[in-house]
Image (cartoon, rainbow, N blue to C red; front, top):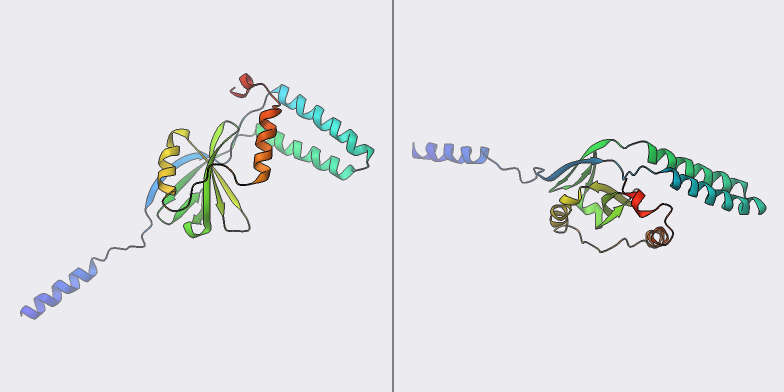
Length: 186
């Protein structure tokens, strides 16, 4: 009789198994898909004048395809700065980071850093994947410390972007702004 009771207790204890692989949400937020800042008329006039001058130079050296590519890039930037991005749900779990419906597991992530991009703060994460090599997620500046505290336990934090192109772009935007500081805040 006693053996049956012990056997029943053992079976009950086995049925209450805690799933150690259960995914737990550590932090969750809603944010836009990409950084967004509406541009003013002064910015677009300056951009078109610069593009026209560069196009004249390229026209003289007969680089017509490059001229078309530059105008296409300006048009794409115009569309991206006039259409507001949708809001998506982002979250950090014990298994990885979700950017909308896309999951990036911790073993695929190498390092991260924060930047101020347009009028948004972005969390930039470098991956081990060929594409995308870098993921940028818009975060609320108030949540930045909480997010940093969670992620730094799994991947290293670096001070600034390791890419030379990003550093050159930041230097040019600081030295040659296309709009005044007061109008950027609008």
